[in-house]
Amino acid sequence: MAAKAKKTDEEDDVEADGEGAEATEAAQPKSRLRLILIIVGGVAVLGGGGGGTYFAFFRHHEAKPEVAVVKPPAFFDMPEVLVNLSNATGDRTQYLKVKIVLELPDSTMQPHVQNTMPRVMDAFQTYLRELRPSDLEGSAGLYRLKEELTRRVNVAIAPSRINAVLFKEIVVQ
Image (cartoon, rainbow, N blue to C red; front, side, top):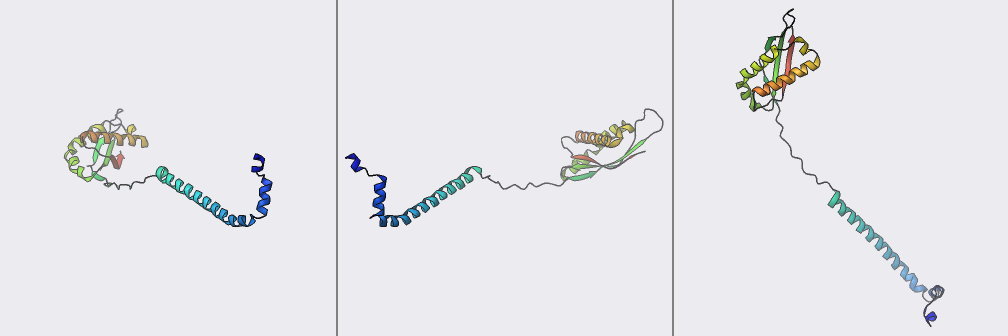
């Protein structure tokens, strides 16, 4: 009896060819419509989920950059310095003439530098008189001179600081 209750696939095909053929033709457009709706829904779910995931995890939150107000540096002309260089051999005396400009972080430091100018000039004179002509040879010698003068100015005007010592003119005679 169980065998009679179960129909084989062949018997189903025969029934579909006979009286159920009209029902299957009407069901085909509905099944295509369902298939299209399922595909469109799946794409929408995946696209929406992917977009949501992107915005939630991968999108970089761009903060509006703050515009930093950069003050232009101020420059302070130092008086010309003329010193005789140290000479161990005693052959002839050589002189160093230097025109220097100090680069200040801003123009509000100019009165402080002006007030401490005697201390700065003393530091320059003391250091420059100990230099030998060989200390000033080449770009490395000038770089060392610039760094040493910057350090000495910063010590003299402490707690303030300058950015750099700039050479306008250097003459060794």
